[in-house]
Image (cartoon, rainbow, N blue to C red; front, side, top):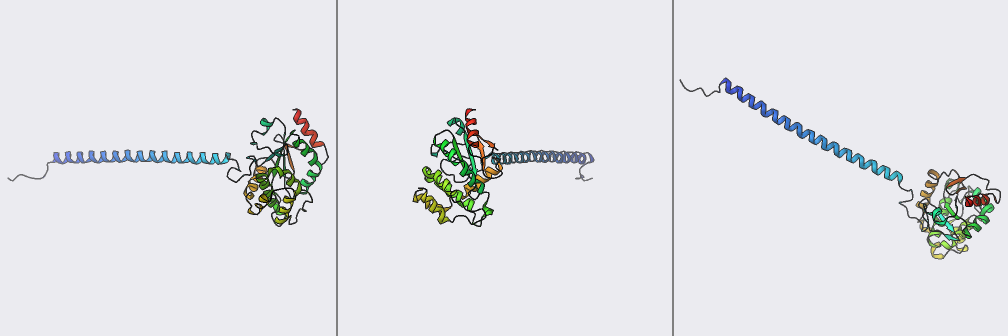
Length: 268
């Protein structure tokens, strides 16, 4: 009788068992690989989420004026600190501790009629105090009334003031004052660019600086300084006055009241 080449029942059973074990090993290997990939993918996803959260938190803490061209001597919060007749060139965090005198911050819009009245009532006192070094007068030119002119006068005027602070700081105060003298009526077109240049020249600003007005270099700075004022500094209208960082709500329409408040702050 010829040999039967077919595997025996026992052999088939052993082969089936071996094949099942091989399939099971392959399945387990595949499952381990999938778990490893899943864990790796989860790790990457978590890391990406952490990066995104850190970035968002970093952006939230980032000063609003960090990424715009800033005039020399201005603070990171949009102030132009002046004492003894010229920009103090101090950081916003160091003004008080460096000078040891009160910091009086004035937020103003050059189209704002109340700002003009504020200057008429308080200019002499504030100018005398800063000239004597008794205070740091922290000017904040902002633009919240662009809609009240047909030419975005608030922004145009403020950016020329920034240009003067940057290029001819010795005449900054004189030019600030000039813009509130014969101030344009709210709702009008405001001064033209040529008229702004004329007032700057009359205030003693060098022609080389006046010639930069037309470039609008500090227009983005004005926008961010305005955002800083209205979203972080508590400014709800102009003029707004802060004494050492605290909004002063006294009656600035009466001469001497603000000066008395400043003198009281100086005494501690």
